Length: 64
Image (cartoon, rainbow, N blue to C red; front, side, top):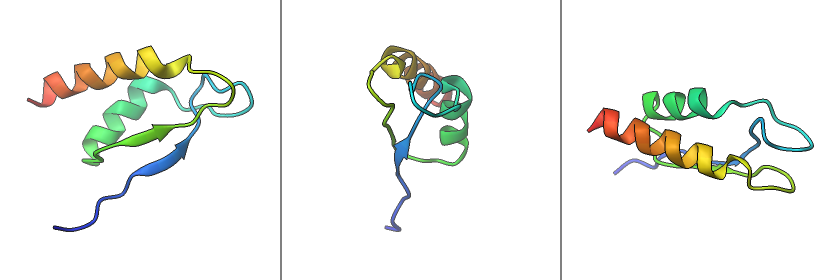
């Protein structure tokens, strides 16, 4: 089994300090790269949590 890359520091558009990554394109790109996980580490909030969860679940239904 080969090691897989997991990005452990990613700031989305919801990060109050920095970050411009939009959730839906992020999830599509992760799926296209077969990345098993990503750590969303926005500063000072969890605003992206629900949007990321819904996008990831929608993507997993498409790939089933």
